[in-house]
Length: 327
Image (cartoon, rainbow, N blue to C red; front, side):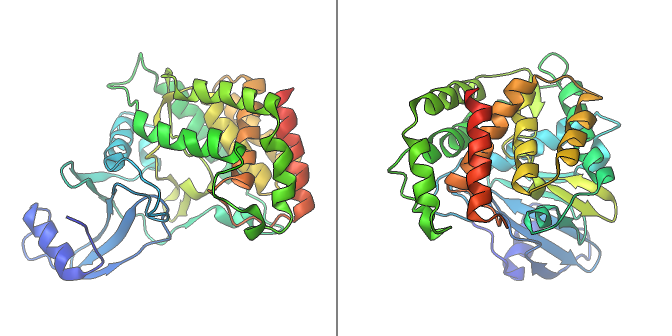
């Protein structure tokens, strides 16, 4: 079945799986925020509210892009693993029910939170306390959950294959169906030399193979400002459908890249790395390579962000990213 925002349909589904309590009725169904990957609704009843998420065989924001339909099950597995951590379980939503046949997950409603994508706006800076919490969460995740210590290992190969194409392949080929001038006039000309650079593509391919290889460390898999939610309960970490056991430098590199794309200061970047490395070790050179690739794919690829950067700032970031990857 394909869930909708129609209250009657949602109510019938919840009753069918026995989720509603005696006397409980659905009073409202709404969209809690602009999701990219999945269909997500907030359900209000006369007793409580909760979030229902369904993953389908395509990306919700880009229906033309196929995606593994069972990805919400990987997300549920991530949350379930973290229940064993005293430090981390309070920073992720509680899962109430997983319907493997329909790829539907029901979880706690975190309330009217706001994510950190405001950082992409001009002259916005992340609070250092918030940044410390974000970085310490992921450092603790990487340190506590390894293939040797975890109850089970999440490989998530299908989602990794999808992500691999969009991170390591499409941004670096000419005929990828994307006209960058439609996004930012003049960007296509800037991108062209990078797509022809064999040294760059060779280095990106190496990291891409490392990304596809099974690793020993549990990663959130998409650790950027859109996955950090500020709520009345504090910072919550959401949307780990790309989670897998890999290498931590990929995760931290992605985070650092987004701080750079959000035009954060050198002090903020240094603080992010220091916060992480106070709890877990890191290969800085490999982290920088991953950061460079993420910068390039976000400027030159399909998964665009609401950046406030002008064309010259994008050119400079791409040059720095190139240096990170090829030096």
